[in-house]
Length: 252
Length: 284
Image (tube, rainbow over all chains, first blue to last red; front, side):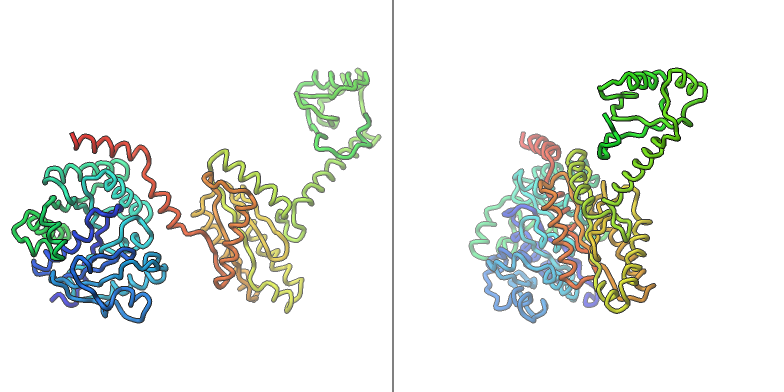
């Protein structure tokens, strides 16, 4: 039933680094896989890929073999303990971060050819570089991660502004990460939503929040998925709510 | 002072009619009295004023004659002046236009480029500069003769001239090299105009059954650019070179996307202010 349909493509992006994009992407992917979805994560953080490290895997084939070799993206897909599939990127390769436009185009074309998944999550790099924007453009939906730091808000707003002014995109979803509670999350969201409405003329969509939780550090240390290692934690509840919200949002 | 022996100067003015006769009479009286100071009518100082008699109402002319100041047409002075003025304009136009195509020449271009840069810095309105180089043009001259080559040039220039807005300056540098200055035009609009000309040249080539196309380089000068006329010239030249180098028959311009990304990326102070204020409310 799901073999022929094209997967939904979401990008997880931020503007600012260190807000928890990769943590969010992997745990969201695990949650969605748990909910019975077929999930593929593409590590598009070409300069500083770290999903493989989070998962404690050392893949032999990576995005590098696609870009500089003859392989298709399909050939480098690997399974993970989170229950989702992964296209790993190789970290710390300088030339990867400054990919030629043609190469980006090639990766984009290959991503669009991939079938057999319900959803593909693209974990973009930090910043607002051309490469990041290209991946955001490829994705049908952009999830922007913010936290309680003011700089993450301004950078997220800059991302929304660029995507709107340069590419005309008007729908963005926001997830607040590493926050005290639900109320703080929606307050922070309200800030960026207000200035988007005021200066750009459209509202943003709030997908949900992930609270600050000790289990996150523990899980990262053990190279485990937090939602699997601590199924009864707050954040596991948060992730299920976000997972549900994503597909509810898609329905209308 | 003897104006006839002086070389033509820009201060020489032909005033076809003078509205207030009193002023004119005043000047003529001074002239008759042998005044050495510079004359002026309607607060326009000049070395000499010409008022053909037919422009003066007959009644007033009579008054003038009574005053005893009149230059008889048969002296040929008026005609000589008018002819000189005409020649002067002619010379000026020859010195700034290209003989074959009637476009402005490089001398004019260099001057106008500096003017437009100064204008942009003052008004903040960007302007565009296009360089055009015909691909394979030499083949016409070589195989069909120079007359055919000239015909091609004249044809495309006439068409481009029809398509240019009255404010644009189209110039020929010589040979098959052209340039155009498009005042108060953003890069996006400039590219559209360049595309139109590119198509137009292709059409003429098709009609004349010659294999000629055009390569173009274009860029915008805006108030943010702190570069000189020469540096801007070189930048557009580089764009033209890019078009030539990457296969010809195309228009090369700076990447619009990366340019607008850079512009959009900067969050304005008003936006930041609003964000800061909203943020402060959450904290309390």
